[in-house]
Image (cartoon, rainbow, N blue to C red; front, side, top):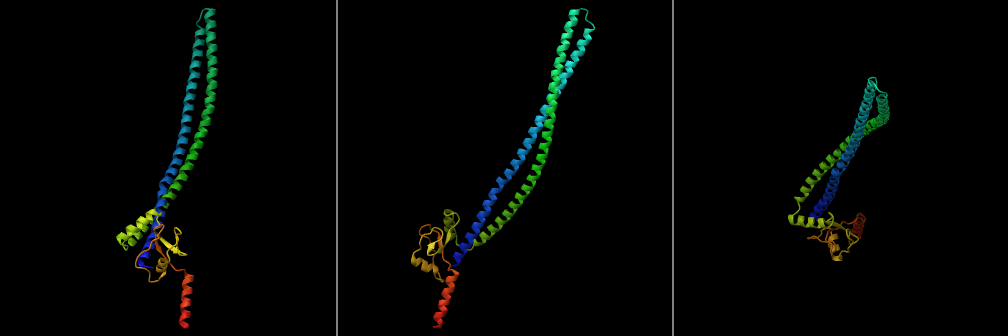
Length: 255
């Protein structure tokens, strides 16, 4: 095989690995965003529970104030009852006292409901805080793992890019342009092996005289392409065929 074909094959192998690493690196932003979204969702749930708890406490304070206001009215009406001089006025005050006491009962009932709700929201907040702490720890571990994987991939990419640059320096510029055009057209595969006298990439048959040239050890002076897919072709004789050829040559020499 011509040395330049070996260089192209080496380059293609490096490009395959480099593309795989780049694809892997492209997944990290989405993975990190997913982790951040989990943390944000956990925080939002906690804030929602805290807000509900705060609202319940405000309502509780409101009904506590209502109870005190109605109680104050009852005390005021009772004080006034000692000062009235007519039976009619006394009955009117008694009616006001009864109404105020009824309002006290209603406010106390609402206050009790809010106290129960407040306790429930308090439990929910504590549960949400515990859940959020767990999410924070899980996210911390997961983010550290992703960042570690990213650092390894970036190091691998840098190494492959350096290796690629070293190979590219040995390939003529026009051939490099030719290789890259074919590779871009065929998903990064610009060089294909001939197997069974056919292009291993697309299956197209290779002309007999081209196959003969490709299979000679001294090989060709020029590069040959698949007539169907345009990939650059190369041929490597199978070890079994090489052994058979060597055995046949040895026997002919003995005769």
